[in-house]
Image 1: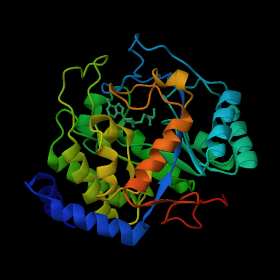
Image 2: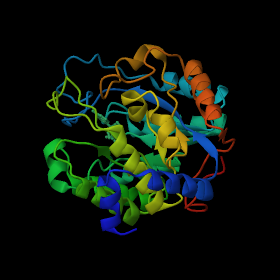
Image 3: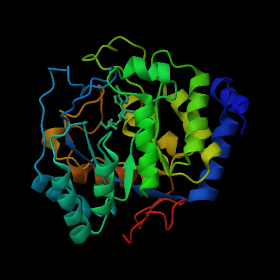
Length: 336
Ligand code: SAH
């Protein structure tokens, strides 16, 4: 697909043909089985001040929490009991957890639960990433958020686009399966910028690509900004599938939060992954990157049930394996 075709797909009135083709390519490249990644939001402590995010350090209205290492392990064990073969550990960006402690946690999870582990804990040094990999982390999620370095600088005043890109390159070098992505509908973001984002995803040869609509948070400087739309997000999902072919693409929580059918629709135009929340209920209300986040009153078992019903209602199945990258067999996938 050319850049001009991507822009066209993001802007022309009717894109049913693109959605249908993305669904076909999804089936051909990654099959009908939907991969589940149990999401553990283990701490909302954050040292960054991103303009879009409810966890930003200047937001005094958030009650901060950090689960203990043992509690994270117990949460992971519960998720494994619910049948998840792949877990994502996500948090704000902080040095609250010494990397050595996280490494011991990863070793224990790998040894006792034998699940695939994805980390989503932000920018670290190369040495820290190397230790986390050696301790058993299989994958890492780090969205570049936008490929426009100008927009990036406006929205992430205390980060740098180049440093985030450097992190992604380190993660690839170290053999992680790497996921990145963007928010759709950021203030000042144009369709051309999203087309650039999609080109960058292709160049980075990502294993996983997670995107979602930007949802303005009233406790941030972007309060009052216009929300991203499901339509534009679905167009981006479909085009990402067409351009990147066999990547893992989740139907994300943010899509489900702006529209009850958001995730189901994404699964029908290119997405093949769901990330059910397995965070203990009492913490969920404190991990609100954006308002209206779904499932914050639910228990892990509720989400498991809801997700399996959703997959069945679409006539799809739930994958029984860990769902490693289809690009990286032998490049970092461990046995589980
Ligand atoms: N601290 C980690 C994890 C971030 S949370 C990191 O920086 O990588 C995961 C993702 O949530 C972010 O990458 C961002 O794309 C998304 N997000 C944050 N605020 C949001 C908002 N207001 N609306 C939609 N998505 C948001």
